[in-house]
Amino acid sequence: MLLYIVRHGIPDYATDSLTPDGWLQAKAVARRLAVHGIDEVYASPLGRAKQTAQPTCEALGLAMHIEPWMSEGTAWKHFCCDLPDGRGTWAFNQRGKILGNNEHYTDRDSFHRGFYRDDALAAQGASALAAASDEFLSRLGYTRTGEGNGYRVTNGNDRRIAAFCHQGFGLHWLSHLLNIPYHIFTASFDISHTGVSIIRFSGSEISYPQCLCLSDLSHIYGDGLPLRYHNNLDI
Image (cartoon, rainbow, N blue to C red; front, side):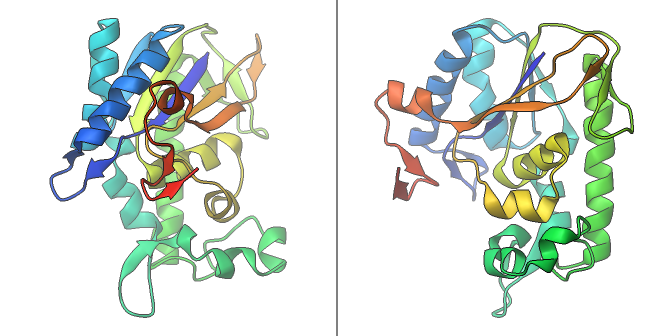
């Protein structure tokens, strides 16, 4: 099975919808996903994610299944922090604080480091995300074993599953799927608008998720759209 995790297109956050450029990105990613086909489409309940999924559903004649646990709002509540001036931001934006100390690399548990607005709430959020992810993958035929990062193959398949979601949620979900500590993965990697990350589940008995690509933007280049990280840095 291949799991395609797709961030939404350029949004207007005030209206929770795509901008005109965001719609162009959504149509481009639909053409990208149609190359080999998608079997099922899932999306966050937020408008910008559903609108990004819409062209793919229309192109392939697929229904859109809404997964409330993929909402960015839930992830934000658990994994945000406060800046000195009182503004809120994602905890992973404190890159110097997170990555500038060797001790942070030797301790996988980051939830007592003061990275988050509420460390206990962040730990609860991580547990909830893990449980929701495991339930979702179990429905798709892969059940977490509890040993290392293995998933027992209960219904092995070659399906291609697309999940349209968000930056903050997507980074934390990828951290869980790859079993990399949240604070290290989310502070070290990022995903851009309509970036496509592909996770492979293979094997006949036990499967270990493998990241084939992270935030692929080939569809943006292919459609001649601006290659911009977060719509403000040419890449």
